[in-house]
Amino acid sequence: MSVAAESRAASIGGNPWLIAVVVALASFMEVLDTTIANVALRYIAGGLGVSADQASWVVTTYLVANAVIVTATAFLAKRFGRKGFFLTCLGLFTLSSVACGLAWNLDSLLLFRVLQGVAGGGMVPVAQSILADSFPPAKRGQAFALFGIAVVVAPVIGPTLGGWLSDNLSWHWCFLINGPVGLLTMAAIAATVKGGKPAERGARFDGTGFALVATFLGALEVVLDRGQIEDWFGSNLIVTFALISGLALLLLIPWEIRQRHPVVDFRLLVSRQFGSAFIVMLATGAILLATTQFMPELVQDDFGYTATWAGLSLSPGGVVAMLMMFVTGFLSRSVQPKYLIATGAAVVAFSMFGLSRITPDLGFWFFAGWRMVISIGLPLIIVPILAASYDGLRPDQTDNASALMNAARNTGGSIGVSLASNVLANAGQFHTTLLAADVTPSSVSYQRALAQATQYFLAHGSALGAAKQQAFAWIGQQVQSQASLLAYIDVFRTLMLLSLAAIPLALLLRKVKLGGPAPMGH
Image (cartoon, rainbow, N blue to C red; front, side):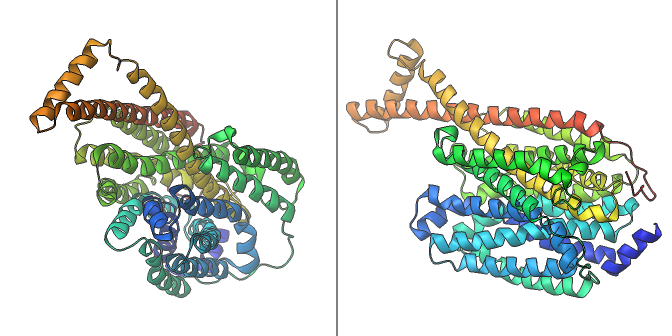
């Protein structure tokens, strides 16, 4: 371990593993809240007397606020000190979480979700920076394995916990549960993380750059999260936000390139190592969040699962992911990150292929089993990609790198959900039209199915007229059900292609020195 690395680690605290546990717990809370509210939306809509479309803004406002603040965290952490800034964010996150649980109407809930998103957006990048500087480069893989539990397991637990709390208590507890956990985590961080003095007021904050990147990411999040709901570019809202996002990006790039202390360091993004890691993290975020959101929807919509059982179908995968984090941390000491990432992407692609073989008669363990396979692959990507992204960075670049990787994960997640939603909607319409073409009076198979269904309902006590109506309705339901399954198959095939695309990107990463200090400059 170099002298510089030793001094940075000493300034952060004593036992690095204890630090890793407490910052990972704080990150776990934040990542959990990106998915826990999804399964509770219908309960929120009913409890507050609003439509499902209005309730969906509970998710959108959190994502937008999270995206807006993330790129300012590097400057704020330096200006106010990592520990002070981290505790402030955690305190605001805890307070706003409790406020969300006590919200009296939709407007108040959305306001508190914005505050929660701002606080959460500042926590995870700083947690990654603390970990990067608490451990020598040779042990970062093991440290990020612990942090990876928050990134991979929290989105899996979110639907399970949210579904159980909503089914058995109320949606308010999806937020109130953060209160006691947040207070305990604040006490633990205050006791374990040391140092973190505010920096000298030398570097000026790139306010214009922050405004541009916040506008770009915030507007992009609205487009991605609301696009399918608002009919994409058939909506003036989506067109407006897409233009705002595009214009902000066009102004952002030349502005940031000219800045001495940019809020987004594009020099990192164009480097081979960090740039490849950034793109792989985008794809990983897309797969992680898309599968976490759409697998529960699939089993609820087409297999009749409750919110609790839909969440439970993901739970075995959470256990596997937790174990794989430590396995991957061990492997990272002797295997190059590029090979671990490529292997993980191949495993995830295989799992997507397996899920594309769904049929109407499948049971619980089909979905739980393939989720376990996904959970073998994702840690093989996330742990080494985080460790590899810091390879060769100077100490003053770690905060900026953390913010960018967190932005990649969040934005990638939104892209994945948006892509999957679009494929699901368009494929559903396509397959419905295709299947309905065979449901015509001139079709022999249709007449046979109609006669059999009518006889079934007659045998169960219906009059002839009622039996025919029930038979018509049953055939319509079968068409919709089959079209839905075929649409989900298309979603999983799309995610499979996305996973396969990450393999060559992973192999672009350069080899890093294992078992010893990594180089500290480009």
